[in-house]
Amino acid sequence: MNALLPLAGVRVVEFCSTASGPFSTMLLSDMGAEVVKIEPPAGDGLRQWPPLNNGYSENFASLNRNKRSAVLNLKDATDVALARKLILEAEVVVENNRPGVMDRLGLGHAAMSVEKPSLVYCSISAYGQSGPRSGEGGFDLTIQAAAGVMSVTGEPDGAPVKCGVPVSDFASGLYAAFSIASMLVHVRAGGKGAHIDIPMFGCTLGIAALQTSEFFGNGRSPGKLGSAHPRNAPYQAFAAKDGYFAIAAGNHKLWLDVLRVVSMPQLAEDARFLTTTDRAKNQGALKDLLEAEFTTKPVDHWINAFNAAGVPHARINDYAAALADPQAIHMGWVQPLELPNGQKTQTFTSPIRLNGEGFAVRRAPPGLGQHTDEIRAEYAGTGS
Image (cartoon, rainbow, N blue to C red; front, side, top):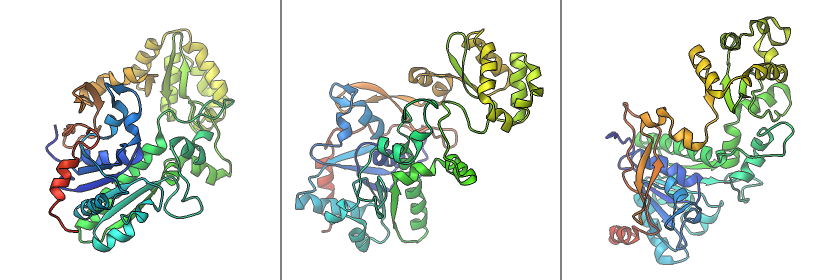
């Protein structure tokens, strides 16, 4: 695995729970950062989420590799003092509490940056550190709802549904990790640190650039299209004889390639389908015509045919199939993992490669407070 760890030596203190914050710090730890996860005596709530492997949460394991865990009671002055020491010795702080919580503890950016101007302090919250909704909490579901994701997800005549993957949590974590890495470059060049404000609401709107630009362009909010695309067709999931598959004919050449595969060259001259815009406008009728042919043969036939034609295509994989895909196996993304209780499992590691090499799991996800004594000993002789 990769010997190149760009963030080696960067010390990060995490005051986070559940998903967005822990994901952001795990991305940093994958790149070599030394992350100390501060947990309350009851632990990160994610530790209770099933599936539990002999009592240890596989969900927690998936977001907390390469970290140490220290339990601190931040209602206790001695533990708050230790938290201050950790922060002042670190380059980065990441927290995902409601705005104001860290300030009330004396551990917020305003107080800590006075003592350490180079500190990169990242706060992840539902709506941001200021503004009329800043005091509100939020989880992935409520942010997907507020930021419009649920208005464009699902079938046109269906009830509101969320994206099955918690995109608000993980997009916010990605924005946080990118912003932290950017600020570290700035600090290493001699600049001052900063308070990074990561609002999940804003991050979720940010990844909806195609939807917001559609609204800015025509004044209408986009609607639900199922698996279809508002500007391209055929570009969706289709029924075959024994299941479903997806194709994405994202340009005119690929459209003509689709017609060759289904032996329907006459559709190229059909007034409803002459241009990409025409096809998108009439994609319901186009879907009916194509599915009349697709449902005569099984998924395997169409996968092979579109592969040969060079049309982007995919089976509708479940996660078992996706993780067993030959490409996933080739990249070595699924790796064995031993949990702190000795149980064996697997985990999906960083998908990134540098110079052709991936990243190893250098440290298993920690037990609750596994490193508390070790960290107390390390900081016993440091300043106030």
